[in-house]
Length: 336
Image (cartoon, rainbow, N blue to C red; front, side):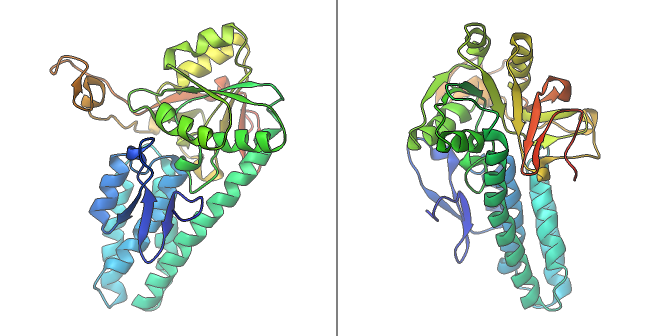
């Protein structure tokens, strides 16, 4: 693997295939836009910052795979690829942000070679910035965690969800580096188990104490006094709500009821200051994610299923937003 990166360019686009974890750590080479769209939809790559990098690299991939030698034809093909990438997952804002950023840079090229070079240069810059931003988020948030804290997290907001280091887990990693004893309670995150498969794998590799819990037990642990803080990532933050993996809202309500601070760690690129909760389309996924687990049937094949990938947590339930520019307590928002 390319150091600690989860997605990188090395004479082509590579990424850790997250669907294989925790059993196998393998890199996937992405050779086409249809393959990248499939990787995004199937969650081979996932997490808001990682999707931003995937979108940016996808535009560069389209440029480098295109046979066009003229700027007009090349940009047209890149714009078509960009639209397919934007639609791959509609809720996470970073995907379209990464696509648009690299496309805007590529448009400054005066010939086809320069268009290709600018696209890859901007995608690489975006990925490198993500690492620095996540480190800054970690430093901003680590002071909010105290020695001996039990910390709840949901889904995976670690290095696998980013180019590296992580957002919510980046805060925890920094607190541990600072010498604090932190014990993480990781929700399994049904139905695709990003918490049990990915978060527990990451924290185990870093030798950070972690206890896996089912999604429904967080309130009990708060009542027992075993959880002092809760911290999650985000896929989009509007003027009034945080969109994150479904189940986040439940934990936020429980934390509010038990007086447990509930923090959201996210880069500024995840903020959407134009929209409100009602303007955002929440992705709904295949019902078989609930009806089946691999080849094992868990429910009647014809049962109706509601399977949203995300939910919205009102900002009034959020204690603070942790960003690379510092910590902000709603309704105060970071300058964008």
